[in-house]
Image 1 (tube, rainbow, N blue to C red):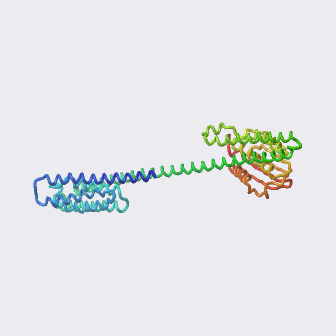
Image 2: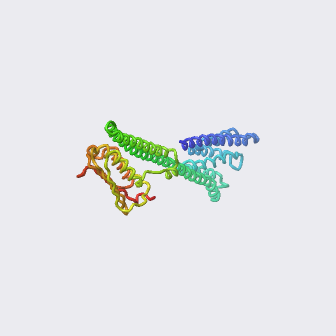
Length: 388
């Protein structure tokens, strides 16, 4: 939009400057003609000079037409009033400006046609003067006509190059804006996944604990109190994580990196929380734990959290097992439970879709479905996809 506005402003300025140029040369030419002593045909020459100079008002909008008028009028004017005699200085200047304008503002056959037509007119004028019709005169006139035309072509080439650079800059700016919008959309999707995992896990734990607390409220007040304490702690943790995540929207990238993130180092606390909610969970770590890339670490934690949340919601009376395997090039996480799994196990739920998106982001693999012992989620995250 700014580029188009700039182009329109440039055209307006040029049209007004062309009119001022034509008026200025007209005033100079008419003054030259009428301030001389009265002679025959002065009014005719003044009229011809007026046509030549005023034609420059269209030298940019219609350069070839302006040159045709200038050259067509210049021929009889030069015959009636030889250049060495009573001709006004503004007339040959207008011819040279018209030649330059054709070179600067036309392309292809129009530029070549304008040059050839002008050469033909000038050579015709030279041939009509027997005293000056020599080879040197033709060569000189060729340089006089060709010089402004070549200058116009050079200016046109530079102008087109600048315009191409401007268009490339506009295209690059639009590309940056599109990339920025794509980055914003990706960040929103990431935050949506994080919020889904946090809220789904917390609400599942709270619902299970509330159900157990309600059942034991009359018979075992102590157990009910523990369930309510667990609900309070789970809700407080979920609110803290949500505040941290939403607070990231108002921070810069450096603060993102400094913000504490969920990690497999906190896996024991997650497993303990799920156990308190009523799902027995066994944790198994194979291999030597290493410092994981932050993205892989967070994604692995969220996958395990979502899988345990699904087990809480859908498994019913069951047990679960979490296995984390550290390999040289991959990290594997596996969560199995002895329940019935989410729905028919086809992976259509939002939680499983979120897991798949996380794994795909790092070029890994995800398998989720019913097995011989129950429902299983298996994810492989390449360590080479991100480095700390």
